[in-house]
Length: 354
Image 1: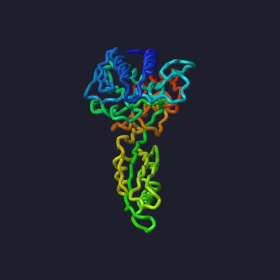
Image 2: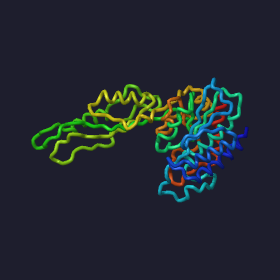
Image 3: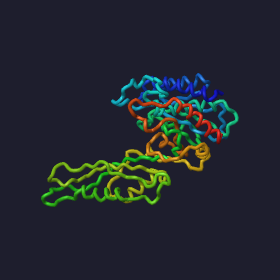
Image 4: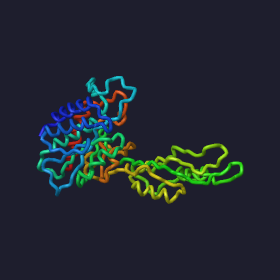
């Protein structure tokens, strides 16, 4: 079993290799190859489906609960503000630059090497399942969601995203609703028809003012915002339809399905969700892993950003080296010492329970 210093050096080298390989969402085959080869070099038996790689600890015991270690290896495309080559993984002034270095490369390589740290242990109370996944940046269906059925029963999950190693114990879910109000077309001058815009206004006002009875301890109330509206074809025709879009940020107080049901009970318009896949996530603040982190001085908070955590139906926590504020920024970077610090803290938090 390698020491943390050695693991940190190996993780940094792997991250530099990953940065040098273009891995936009849906185009992660070469980073998947590298991750697969790296794990196999360490004697790990790997499994693959499309660009997702996963593995279990060497002495997996089906009678023990399993901890999921998950992070992603896809990136967004570099924005126009870059002044550096986004694939040139240079280290300057303690910073490792490059596309995906912070989101979520530092987390990914840290969790890979945490997995390797525990891989051959025979004295664990838990199993480990490592899942390095694709398409996170586009909430795609061929990433983590694709392989969840293959991962078996999981006790809880650690999702690697840059949080400065603070503990995101809850994450908002997201539903986008396409709503349609129906009226009857008619000539505006003769007061004919039934104006769909006026019907929509009543429902829009409801979306603006309604408060759900249950509120999240972490986030407070669910937030609903009408963000797009469209109706009418010409000035003298009463419109028969009015469509509008609602952005719903769901908290851990409700499941997406419950929120959708409550909305449909209160409005007259037709409500069609684009998806209910991006679920709110949470873990009990008294969970042993959370308490292990708190004992090490880590703070807990609720995350406003969405990650692969939204695809999990198990208790999960988002935590990792790097800073969310650097994600998707020009000249993205992660501090070199954040990786070593991240590996060390992951292991200390896990040692408190495993």
